[in-house]
Each structure stands twice: as C-alpha cells, then as structure tokens.
Length: 237
Image (cartoon, rainbow, N blue to C red; front, side, top):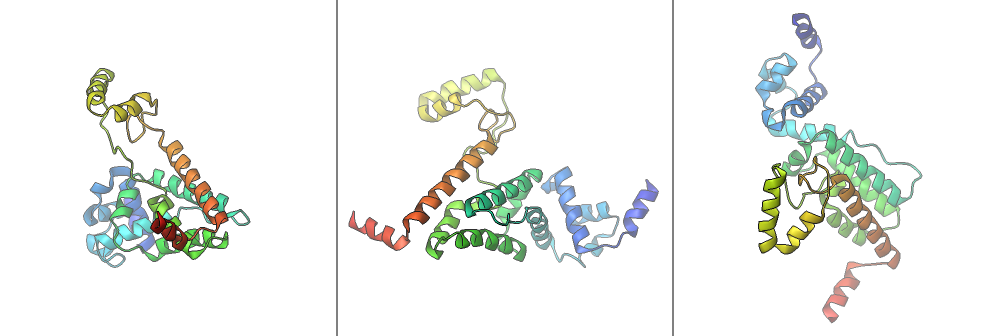
C-alpha cells in the first residue's frame, strides 16, 4: 500500500490528471464528496498543489464537464444529418449515464467552456450542413435544450421507493384528486431503475422524444419553414 501511494506521488501532477481524478472521485463517492482537500488526498499531494492546475472549485467543475464532453464520440462522417445528430446525442447520453452526477454539474455552469462550445458548434453544424436555415436551426436548438448534451429534466423527479401496498394506497388517493396523473402512473409498467421508480423506461422515453423532434425538424426543413412566416400566420388568426 505504501509503495502504491509512493508510485502515485511520483506521477507528475497535471491538469488532466487532476480533472480525471476528480471525475473518478465523483463517480465513486458522489459529487457532494468532492472538495480540494479530499481530491488532494486521492492524488497524494498537498491541497495547494492543486491550485497550480485549477484556480478554484468552479474551474475544477468546468474542467470535469470538459472531461465528460470529451467522452462523446465524434461525428460520423458521411452519414445524413438526422443519423449523425441522433448518434452524437445518444453518445452524449451514454457519457452522462456513466457519470450520473454530471447533468447537475452541467446545469450549474453559468458560462459554457470552449470544449462545450466546440461540441455545440459541431451539432449546430450538422443541421446547417444538412440544409437547415440559420432561423430554423436557432429554433431547433431551443427545442432540443439539454437533450443536446444527453439529458433532460424529468417531469416527476426522483421518487423514493415504497412497498407495493403503500404504493397502491398512494395511487388510490391520487386518483381522487388527480385522475389523469394516476391513470398514467397506474398504466405504466416500467424499470425499477427509472427516475420515477416504478415509472418510465428512461432510455426509451429519451430516444422516443429525440426521434419525434428530429422527424419534426426534418418536416419543417422540407417545408422551408421560417419564424417570420410563422409569426405572420399567428398575426392573422
């Protein structure tokens, strides 16, 4: 064990090593456990040594996001725009699923890093080179939202697991006040690992929504849709 720790200390400290160690620590112990002192212990250095590579916690988190985005597969050359976008976004989702804490960190960032901007630029470029106008692409990006980076904010959030009997009582009570919500909850038969507990198959729902959006974008592109025309139609109603 001592020899192993000495070997870790002998590896030169670098920004990349610091960031990857931080990602590994967040994966193993949760993002809440991450601080400079704990990270320094993992690397076998004094905390001050970290500040030569990351100025503060925010810079550390930005760099960790860059590591995750760096795991997203590059665009598929020669593929049509829809296939290329779909494959890129599903690769982003796989990266996010490997690091469950990452979506919260991405949402907390105020300014995107150059790595994130480069990724977004490449996705935008797939639509533009696929024949989409600047106008339509602008609205496409709004519609896609965080799905571009492989995650969405789930409607029901995290629900604590309960035993079947208690769940049945909760559903009966819900049905009296919120019949349509209860109807959906009762009808669904889903994975235990879903964000809604006995709720939706998250991967299926993500891909369904992605495919619906891409099909809709394709139809608008083929129709020569513009926001100006849409605004005019709205004014005439």
